[in-house]
Image (cartoon, rainbow, N blue to C red; front, side, top):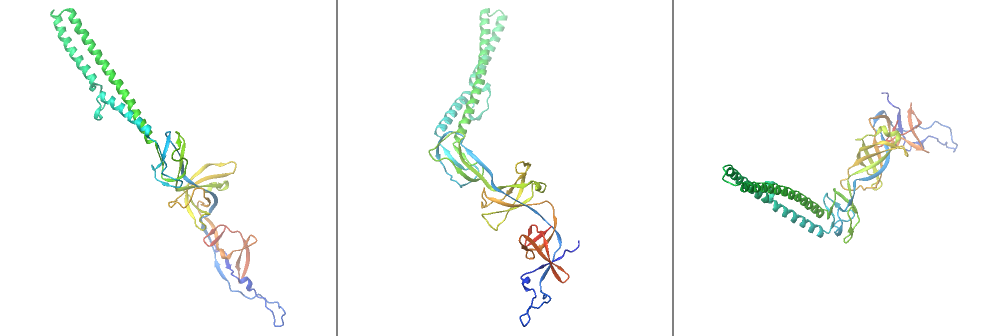
Length: 368
């Protein structure tokens, strides 16, 4: 690669031009006096270019937390801005009524369990239900009695009427056994319903405490002690503020230069002179027709909470690959009336050149 021309850094040397006066006060034409200046040799080199865009910081998550049960608010342990962990209490609703319902449901379930002999966590078995066991024993006894009667009747030792009586007793015992088994099955279904009511009652008790869905900060609390809330009524907002998201709008011509994983740096007015960084996580699959722009989202670490949702951000997105540019010290570039100029060595003289500058790289400006 050939070396680029040298740029001359001129401090105040333009004022040191050589126009002298003779002793009589008459200005004489003379060659300009030589001026000592500093020169820097610059060369073309690859640099990373950036797209400059703007956007807004938003919370990673912003939940509108609602009550799951109706009732009177009895406690509000958080205020706006309170930091919470997942599961921390946001508000408490009176639980007196639902606790009474839970106790009633538990008592009904326990009564059916005792009737079915399911104490101590024993699994349901219809044959172990006392009524079924008794009916089964009676049926077995009736069958034995009928067997004896059958033998006696065959030997002409038992009358037909007595034999018919034994047969009827066996039939009745077997039908009673079937009825007992069906009754036990129905009671077990009733137990399942009772247990479901217990679970619902216990959930209602748990729902009297509205909890934070994730770790973050309370944005708003909409109710106070004594307020009556209904199911689905919004009671608070919780925001996840670490990390944050920065939503950026990228002009259509730069769409090919952005992709998930690209580095993003940005500034906010709240902290002048300080830069923050993040990484592109999401790129919209389509360009907005009205603005001809693409929406993308970057993730920004915020461990100390200094950055706030709603901050306006001026961001720089790193483009893919490297591009060639000539870098010159910013001090070598003079801008007058919006036109950038540098002085280039030509032999032993400095010639002024108009240049187009690009982005700054440290204390240097790029020319592409």
